Image 1 (cartoon, rainbow, N blue to C red):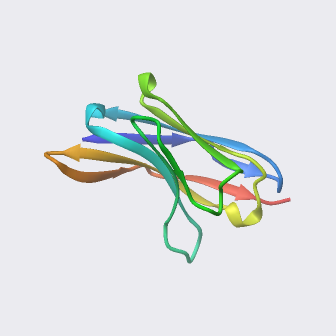
Image 2 (cartoon, rainbow, N blue to C red; image 1 turned 135 degrees about the vertical axis):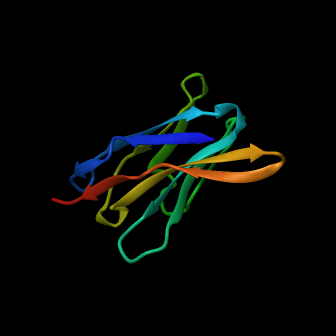
Length: 119
């Protein structure tokens, strides 16, 4: 089992920046990728970005050029640098880890961290 702990959310003005962190613990050897999702009130959870163990990245079109995902594999930590934040980016951001458990993918989730974008 893997536990994920996010940090770094908060209040930021439009155009500002935030950096989210997510530290994994437990059976981290089962992790194959780590990423971020978000969920705004009344909306479904949506994919933001992911990075594989090999360093390949994928981004949602809505954040390309503004958000950057990175990982420190030695610390089992994934980061999300968010620049040029807009009110529509406000949401609860969830860390995700894809786990390889007996050749099946299992998803682990953090508890979420709130990002508020407002002047």
